[in-house]
Length: 175
Length: 175
View 1 (cartoon, each protein chain N blue to C red):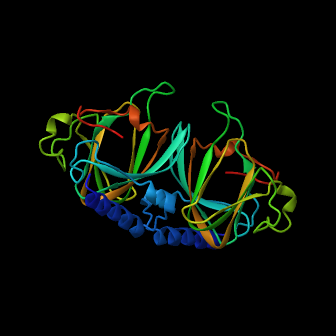
View 2 (view 1 turned 45 degrees about the horizontal axis):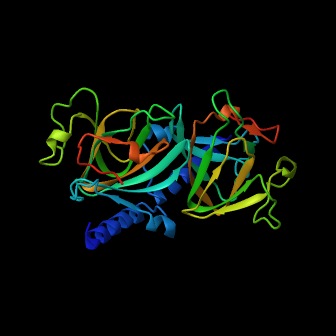
View 3 (view 1 turned 90 degrees about the vertical axis):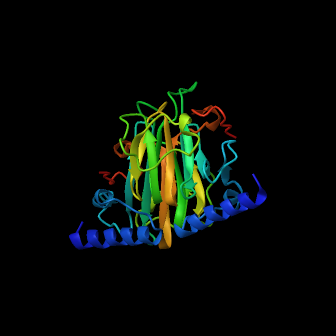
């Protein structure tokens, strides 16, 4: 990723946190993760996040999405120590369009990134406005996209092991 | 608790959340918990909280403390399904003076509620400003008190079973 894009996105992240009066330590500011999933098109497919805590039992993160940015479809499969990561998304600002396994929504509010449609297979829509939350069970495919104003989402979950996530798009490289 | 006190504290809670731009649903607003621990002196000993999620694995709450209010000393003992609740406190606003098991701090910043000193036995001080966090292992005694401007604290933890908490003060009634 070009340094100027990285810097622009980091500034966006910090401006969203400032709007919400979320305080980060200097170390946390240095550890903001900007993930393009190896797709090299971060303003379309990507995710920004800060991990507050990830113990052997629980994990807490805040996620920031750019306007209309999509986090690609994936699931958290069974691991050596459990049935997979369970995660709850709670929308803090903006709007998030979340798609999970289940009955396909007939007229979804948003579409997968153009050209990548074949890597998106679940279309049960859950719309999260600020204060709304949804729990995704382990081993369940899901993807999500922000609305026009981006979004901030708090994630509460069991232990996070990003390297074990399974993405539908085989081009994805996590970490 | 007198209705007027209850209402005053609820309004304080909501004003703190408004300052931080934390959005609650109407149902959540109705479910704000105002706990005086049966001590009938809530402005001195008590805690206000909202539980966002409490699954069989993880729990997420936000806690609000009134100015100089103390949450009495307690621990989360071993349960049928684990070694006890593990919890991380992250300060969002104000200052929290947390005391846990360990080497006694010589000149602690604050004291237990006057008259209740005998029910406070741990004095290893951890001071949390906004952005600071601390993880309390299972089965570990702790208590905490807000500074002059109150505090908002996010709690990420394993499953919460408040009824199993063990308080040092035998007068405490939880729930």
